[in-house]
Amino acid sequence: MRKIRAASSALGQTQAEASSSIDRLLFFDRDFNPIEDFLGNDLPASVKPAASLWEHFPQLDKSAITLAFRSLDESVQPLRISGDLGGPGAHGLTIYRIGDLFAVVRSDELVDDERATLLHLATHDPLTGLPNRRQFSDDLAELLQETAGSDETLSLMQLDLDDFKPVNDTLGHPAGDKLLQFAARRIQDCLTSDDRAYRLAGDEFTVISRGPGHPAKAHRLAEALVAAFKKPFTIDGIAVFVGTSIGISTAPPDGTSPEELMKASDLALYAAKQEGRGRPKAYDPEMLELLEQRELLRRSLRMALVQQQFFVEYQPISEAGSVVGFEALLRWNHPLLGKIPPASFIPMAEADGLMPDIGAWVLEQACREAMNWPENYVVAVNLSAAEFLTSGLTDRVSQTLDLVGLPPERLELEITESVLLERTVNNIDTLNTLNVLGIRISLDDFGTEYSSLSYLKTFPFDTIKIDKYFITDLESDPKSQTIVRCIVNLAHGLDMQVTAEGVETPAQAEWLHNVGCDRLQGYLVSRPLPVEAMGEFINRAETSVSHALV
Image (cartoon, rainbow, N blue to C red; front, side):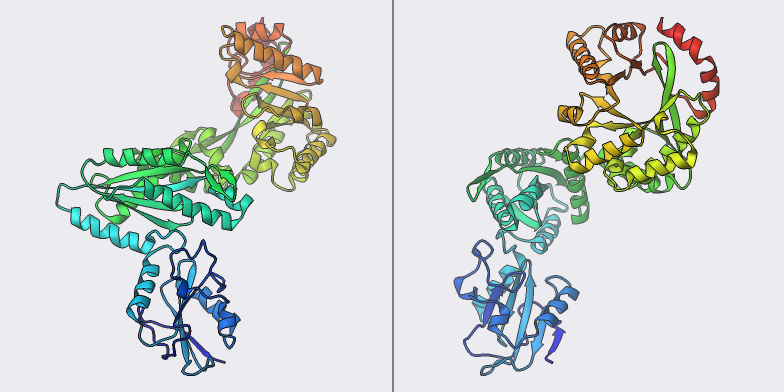
């Protein structure tokens, strides 16, 4: 078997044995196949082979070479293959990984044009022709050194393409590669002689901008880039819309080292995406504080369940002047930061895959507490999208009810419209299985998300909950009144109950009663209650709630 080892020489200093004029320097794609036109647009035709590496050199051990490159650092260590490869003077190859391409060299000494080609490919992205991450790092460090101690400033922009992944997923990677090429050209078209663009990886680009007038100049350039990406790209006759989000940092105010400047622009990019994408955002020191707080929460969240930092409060639900149950509301008491609002940590828990475990804990706690209430009281528990879409949900709910001993008709699971983005067979099966178990299903925050009427036709929800957004100005806004009246009529026409959330005044309660709303929930009935206050509230519930709603 031929000897294969990593060469420690620098790029361009190959140790392969000299060969004749055949195949001195060839380039192949990431799979060692011939380069397609859109991948090799930056290469001379003379170095583009018509066949794969294995067809050019059938003596090579394909599996050994593939395995060797998996274990080598990308584009740093070339691979030296020594041995008889067939043909006169053919005793060795050196293979370089450069971005998405492989360069194969068969000579002791590189001629100038070959060395220049290799050097160019080592510092440029072969797909777009832009300078790559290596060149970017060298340029940024050099430019920051030049500006140090002077009045000159420069700006760094990080660009991410918005909605690039769906293009790859729906049209394929060749279309995605073409889109990246078009995006690179569109970026370059916006630049001046003081600006230079780079492709770092995937759909990540950067721009270094020099000259007078920063940071205002950088912001104008970023606005121009965002505007340029609002125009569609045409790929194989298909119009594709891909925007860009941009984070901007300026040296020296935001940092004097490449690491500081990259961190600042990265934080600004994150803020731009959080605010809706398709926009530029300049770095602000407060962004770092927010990130540090978020990371503190993220780390703490993983220990919160184990350390019993979560607790549940219960908000009463009234019907015809009497309490009929409670909604279980998850709370987090952080040991350092105090009470954390659910809106701050639940999306984080969903993103980190923690919500199924947290949700299972909430369900069991709420069911156990409900066993202490009158037998006609229901307990409503929210199901997040992460829980609803997790396999085995119905089994876990059924097992919890069996474990605690709570009758299924006393449990109401609340699902938001965002969970039901698609009317899939799995979603319908889950809802039907829960229904068969005897569990009540409520559609929460109706009207604020997607309002999928097809679901109301396909699946018989027990309850529709009107979001407090429509209740807040119910007394004065005719539009809110019309919407609420329509929801009540719609629900009753489909044989469903209606619960209004966020009811705070007797006038709101009276209006809702007059249009036939079945249940009320909000501060007028009661604020969320800790477990310790439940017994006393239930004891005086019948009289106190009746008086409050008269």
